[in-house]
Image 1 (cartoon, rainbow, N blue to C red):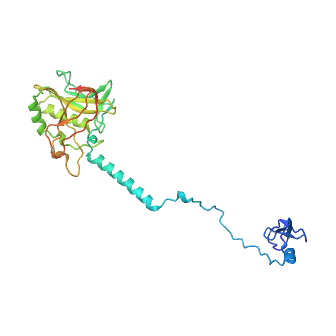
Image 2 (tube, rainbow, N blue to C red; image 1 turned 180 degrees about the vertical axis):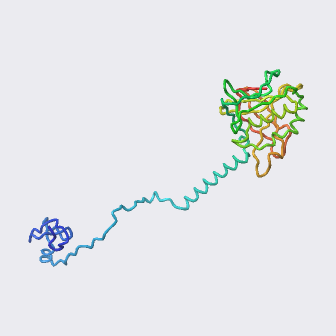
Image 3 (tube, rainbow, N blue to C red; image 1 turned 90 degrees about the vertical axis):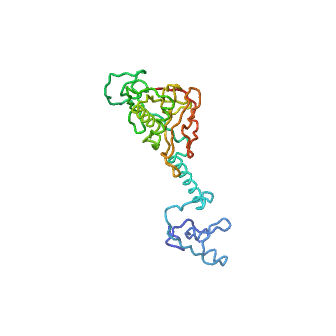
Length: 290
């Protein structure tokens, strides 16, 4: 039923004195009884009650934001700049190779290889003129770009003296190449140095090294010198930096490779820019292929 005072509104109760219908804006409770505006005005001289105007509101709930969840823009920007700066610093070290541990990359393998040219020649350690580097049954080491490491042996190559080996390394350009992850890493350097040495008449081996810390290992080369015995050479270059190009210094290094010992190569031809090298870890396994 409509309110007696506001016909456009529904009543919610009945005045206990006069029986008129009252809406929620007109209803008053006096001594526990419902009274209408007319009866109250008659008894108490109260002013006329006017229902407040009801404005249309949005049906959607207003967003609630607790003060403690409000992020001040100045702190947000500070954290953003710190994050960007940290990311740029890591990217710089990764690209420049100024962290010594970044000059090395592990070895990967494949089971898919193409046929190599055949040769009847067999070397003193069972090597053939053309061969892939084996890492087990139907397993072959690959370079950074995924190509199988291929060794080209010279049947006329001889074991050098240490002095002859140093003379070769001084003019060989393998270590002048820049190191790039996914393009040219330790396995590629060892492949190039091996083939360059064999081409120069120096017998060489390709070496895979595992470390006790795990990971995917490292590669270098071995030479059986006539005066100092087996010598390991690490020719892995570094990435170019803003201060120095990789080709400006020799990266030829001699390494002691012994199971249970740390692998720390030492520069053969010291360079003012870069001649200190960090340990790669404890050697756990060595595999040599001539």
